[in-house]
Image (cartoon, one colour):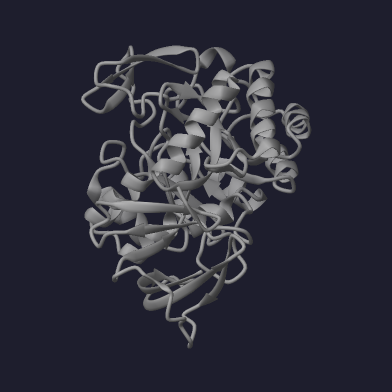
Length: 376
């Protein structure tokens, strides 16, 4: 199947007008010289890779940490509908036995691969190795020091699906944990009160990711720079950003892309089960009560919790806030694929990769979703 007359976000991260081919669920020729007469005319629509959310807890009333398989499938169905064709759900700070159950469901979804659902390509283990002071919406009852053996057991139990593990580098044993875990998956600095020296130690030890930039970490200060400058000056570190318009001001979204560059930014939703729920809903987050009021999810003490949006809308927000379109699309597709080691399969429109793509209007107000070449 050939598609023509499209504005294509190509593998070199630029938009080009032309055609592309889909063969047996994968991309074939991109911008071919010869276009068949029966090629499907996309009438100038914008074509981008399927989006990849590497940090989302849930939606539609379901949360990954519930350990409910049908709930996980409902989450994956929602992701697919909004153009998130691959995802790595994030767990919360919870006891190991609760995480084991959730991770087993992730393994089951991968093994069964139900049709029409977003593809689960990993797990982000967000907690329990966090700072009490910067716990945010994480449950303080289950926080603990970095524990490589416990992490390793969870990783082996789910068949290696943990692709990102989070840790606060100032905790006892954090440096040893990072040096061991970096050979297993991506290590991310998160929910931390670390100073600059501890943060730099973490990145020198092998951490290459920063979870939800700005949130649950010290602000930048000219005499106490902290985590963010330590991450920015290390070229190996990518930074996540929640771009729902609530967790970070539009000016700080632009600043993040200026600081890290489009090559290193990873847009995420950080959505919770409240995503898709009506205003005023009460919901549970990591064993704690939370409420969705006027689009903002908060705990009882007022702490801003997860988001109530999806990655597609976050990408559109980034463009609306002034981020270059190419950088916003890359940060929602290729960069997250790299963070979870899936970039050889998905994340860009290149020959041989899975043909997950979105056909969007010029203003991104509408979209058609294709997975493995088939329209949902």
